[in-house]
Image (cartoon, rainbow, N blue to C red; front, side, top):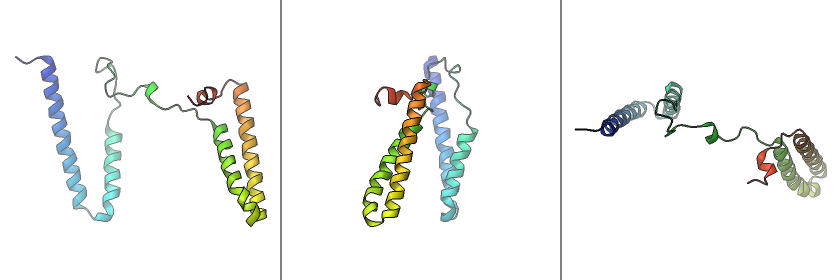
Length: 143
């Protein structure tokens, strides 16, 4: 007498075998085509699978969350534009310093742009901190 767990495992194995067969069929179709078109067909096949699959619902599997994504699993949407501006400004300054010697106008131009970016970054950070919108990574020192 098979248990409910065994029945579920058998269904899962059958589904895995069927998916493997489908993947092999897709592979054969792609390999039969012109080599120049294979990359585009591969991307098309992947996009079809992604678009056609329904999102996983936690309520269907009893809320175990196995294989499902939660809001907590996704990266935070809020990134620090202030940190990006300051970082890019510092990189431009590093590039601009040697250029001041070789090409003074270009070097000074880059230094001015770098200073403006760093200044806007500091202002954005101060404004975000004053309004309570500072990113958590900056508040905790990146931890």
